[in-house]
Image (cartoon, rainbow, N blue to C red; front, side, top):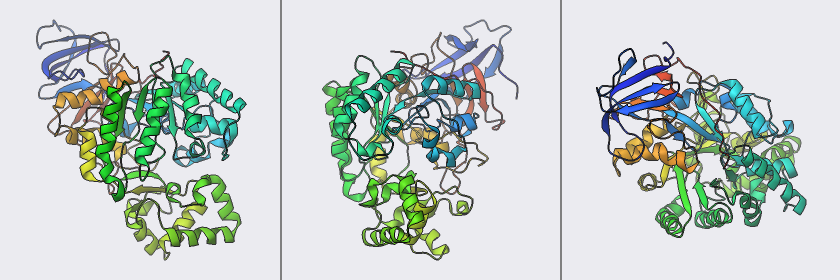
Length: 526
């Protein structure tokens, strides 16, 4: 595979320009990394211009992943296999309250299991320099995370901030925004964000006032208190810029499945009242996070590293947790909904298997295995929770304010950095397949491209328009589909023919492992 020339044309495509307008036949000329011309076929004089045939294929702007966790993985594995192969050309990292900058060496333990990287960055500017030095295959923009700021200033402590700590966190957030952070994120189900109250996050979000940068949140609850958590998100967004991105919107557990329609109605009511609201969602009914989030009281107020140290040093503490688990069970539903997703070599052959199956194979009860995982790993190991309803998935994806987000890191297709939830490789094509049942394809493409780009103020991308950066996806809309499953989580999506990043061919289905590295770090100053 050869690199793209400085000037080339993609000819006779069915063009979805990202605006939501119906597709039209077109030739698209790219020169020096930007879109030079968009015209009907054979109207342009293309003598001497290298031509790429798009006959029978569709062309769209590069897909924008607003919910990514590639903060470190893109530095370790800049090829971004899982993302570029599904058409993603831009990722927004720093989600769920956790960003890679404003970290101390002793605070990066939770990320080491994924990448092995020991780097830490004092601010967004130094992190951006590290990303650019890695030359990723995709573009990257970053949010500033609440949990990271809180851990830097106070550590993992269960108390309110002092006034001086609040001022320090506000200054760090303000500096991040001035350096180009795309917005402010929270993860109020994780540590130490769960120690904060609404007023704390509102005060921090006030730094967003006067900007058009959003507040992005993994809400405090997606289960029994999901409606209350959504109201809290509205309140915090109103204290800031009036822009809210709800991360991986869902209602988990049978007791909460009926709340989906109320959630959508409240979002649309607040939109009418002036809040700008978007939500992202991966097109699967099982989540993927730490086993730690399913620990019951009173252990649920102890961060993973502290709990691990307690369990390792005290047999009595392990027995206390075991008896609590036997009595209370998994707070995220029945154990038969929990799937083991550990990448540790000794457990990797159990990846994608029900935790009950793993426990039986190891001669343990599920509660005993759970305690073992929390003892062995700072975050208790990794698990998927099949607690969502297929009908609700389709319901959320049918709404115009819902955009795709992988909620995953960019990892290699060869498994060298572990396996992943199928969303890591299949989200965008799978989202497309579901969403097009409820809306015209051009509207679905808009939600995958220009809508998220504009919401995060990335105005140089998301449209196929002369003068903009040439991030493009050439695809077969009839076969476009996600193929990743729990049994084969790194299966490549079908239908993606070629992907261009900043005017350079970055991926081709003809040679999937070939890559070029022309991604940029994207900063927004407003």
